[in-house]
Length: 371
Image 1 (tube, rainbow, N blue to C red):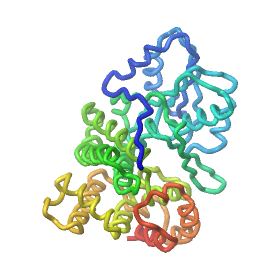
Image 2 (cartoon, rainbow, N blue to C red; image 1 turned 120 degrees about the vertical axis):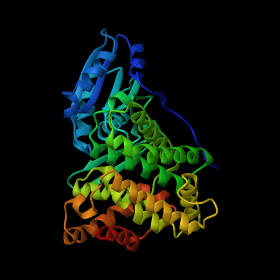
Image 3 (cartoon, rainbow, N blue to C red; image 1 turned 60 degrees about the horizontal axis):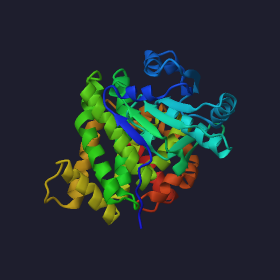
């Protein structure tokens, strides 16, 4: 038996911030990073809130939020006792906000509403039961999953992402693609998650190149915002896989953007998973659905076309070669592989990969980055 449920109420499209007009005479606590704290976007968010609210700010969020940041946030939340918590920013800010609220609630501190407002189109964190917390001392990222982590409200306003630089647009957009692909071949996939993943894949291939080149196009930005949320809904229900299990380690070891780490691994992961007959058929179905391959093509040929289109999409988005992206030599990567393998095998996302993986499999995928 499989389950599917929706817990987060989603408001999307230009002007979605108007939803915040419903909150009056509340203690509102905004969680964001230091950059957004001095950005006009934060002013836009504050202006969307009625003036009779009491607004506080926690802006200590850094990329890959770590355990100490979450602890500090919990301490502040216990002092402020906010009614509404707003996670505002990219995946790091949203994950930190969700983690802080989740742990605080476990300690008996309740809030009325947790709101997620993404300012990038990639993680899907605004609609997922997951958050990733890093341990810099061990160079490991810990993905946490719990139904209580879901935000209550997600606001997808494309006006908040028009100034995102092309490189970040590319990285986050390919993160969306990875989420959708892993959810699609997951053993826990269902008709419901398939529909979400299929639409997300189509939107990414159709709109990501334009979003990278013409970032001020609200229609395109809105489509990528929706794709991110669709993929987030899909993987939150179906799970992820080995792509994320290894990408978490590349991020922890080399401190590269999560979406970029995922993008570097996409092709070798598809080649590894496609040895499984079911996964191969599912990749092939996506290739045909996107019209990358004729309807009568054999599965292997269709998978190769999907891989070709992914490589072309990466080139269109200007992604660097793996070693250059990680800023390491082949020897430096080789030295880290044992640690990457150990941590990847323990990563919870590996559980829903369509094909079982051992240390040799993970090594082969990482070593494919040399090519």
